[in-house]
Figure 1: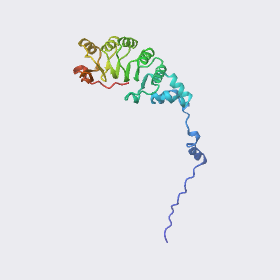
Figure 2: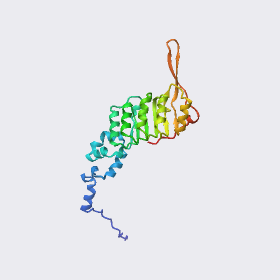
Figure 3: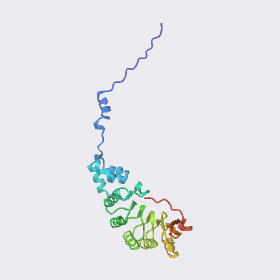
Figure 4: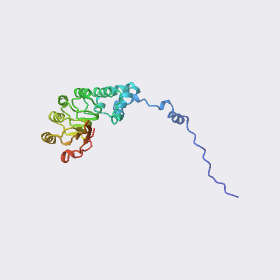
Length: 252
């Protein structure tokens, strides 16, 4: 006779009704979270991770709580970053100025850095509403040709420490206005810009003595050829020595 095994087959465990209800509730309507009920500091952290252009467009569509935070929390707009992909090909997005002005207004005078497109009107608006601005990074073409305008602008931004210009023409008088009226200026990167005249020795010495990290605009020589005068621009390499050194990455 064979020996009968005493091992018994275990019957499947049967969940209690309460356990089954808890498991089903994870997939039911009760599992949906009320984002508006989150604490304000948690919402602030979430919105601080969202691109600011998206906050301007869609934050108010989530709920009234999100909209109030996006409108009434100046610290969200302490560092404004509104770059546009179209900046590279010269076709700005529609209503960029309206969005940029809205971001500056929401900062309630606490904006310390701005990165994005500019024009003359917006720069004056920024200077009037962000007197504590420390960093300005222009991602679009902007020509600094008017000494009077640059003097007025520089006087309105006494805290300015960093200026980065992506593209445009710069006159020497504008550089002089910046160095004379921005006493805290430590970084000036105009390597993507150009000028038609070489910088004088005295102005170069003033820039070197007051600005720690400096990249001057490249010299663009215009040559005429033939009777009609074929216009050709020649870009010369940046100056060597201190003026031509590489800059460290600018943190925004």
